Image 1 (tube, chains in turn cyan, purple):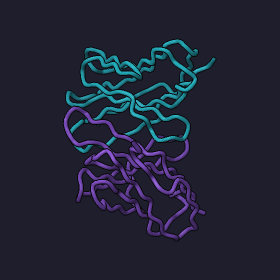
Image 2: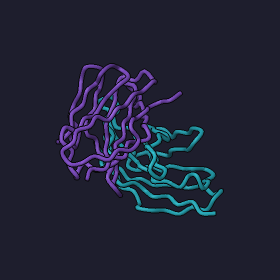
Image 3: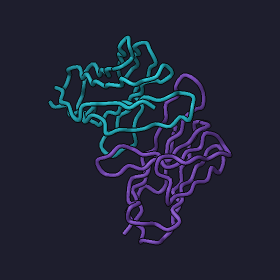
Image 4: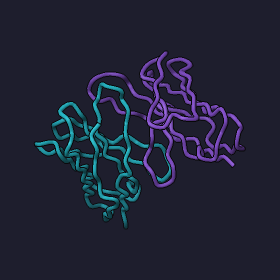
Length: 111
Length: 114
């Protein structure tokens, strides 16, 4: 599975969009990009995933560059409850289903 | 809908004691996983079960055993606990199939070994 690089921490004002970048320059053609978050000490929460196309759900949007070497998770209107560690993970979908977590980006949303 | 349920939520053991962590899911998922998370670090995979009747080692399997009891339940056993196994343990499950099925996690078991 490809390795990802994320900033260690980011800040965002409440109500503004939070844009979390992820670099995955060695991604393979059959690897998906997943985003999870972990609020305080809770279990990781699935946010969104995608292969090539941009994706949107009720929580967030995922923008994947055309060459698939990087992506951005967008929380359109960040709230204090979005303060968490966000993990970007790439993996082959059908193989072993294992997730390899890095250290993620700690997003702090401030009032 | 409970999702993934882990028991117990907290446990303190003495070095050398044994213990089984329980995990059950009600989403009819084929695959289940055990991870550990140490302070300030990401999750690391201990063992996983791609389907009922199969188990495989992950990144950090030493000192652990697992049992896939049935499709719903996947237990993690520490035969002789060591202080290095003090951690938060997370169980997860996912459907098996193409399209990148996401994993769903429980709330964790916080284990301290003295």
